[in-house]
Image (tube, rainbow, N blue to C red):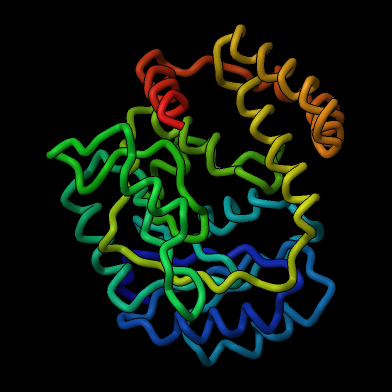
Length: 291
């Protein structure tokens, strides 16, 4: 779309009906943004449905041969030709004024690399607990920034400066899914980009009923928390995280699955390990102390 400044990137897998609902919602935005749908190896009718939805606007479909997890979003960002990229999941979409508002904010704050939006959940539109936490971030609100500083976000309600995202390397393939936002947030901050929560930028999330069970999600979350610590935190913190996960297996069996999965990825994690700058580590400790 000529003149577009934000591309919406959606990674999807086997949620055809929900994806079509999201595409319909996005098609109602004015101006209508270009959309890149990255199909993570779906085995349902997703690809055919997206092709048929072409009348909804500028929609590009990229079909991956296998499920690349969160890293599928990287493919979408690489294809975008706009300065900003708004992520959406196949069960989320952006409010009517969200993208123009975000564009103005990012134009006015050239060192802000990511805006974390307020996420409204379900038909009741109650605030997601993560949004509430970010609004009261212990990192405070620098008057020169558009909102409280954060070191995390929800991918389904984040807008990034494309150059910042690419500089940071995007989402890690090693983490696949489950808290994958944390590592990217750390790496953006390490490069000197600001991440801010902005309440006036809003996204809608109607959680899909087509999802993995809670146990699987908990295992991935624990695994990835440990991997991120091993890859970015000081050695004593990294060692302690591994020990704590092993100890946790004694009272919480899913931790054993997470530990096994993390250990299987340990060689790759160590190969990608590098310490964060001291100021970023200080902010992480401040957040951990607050929680």
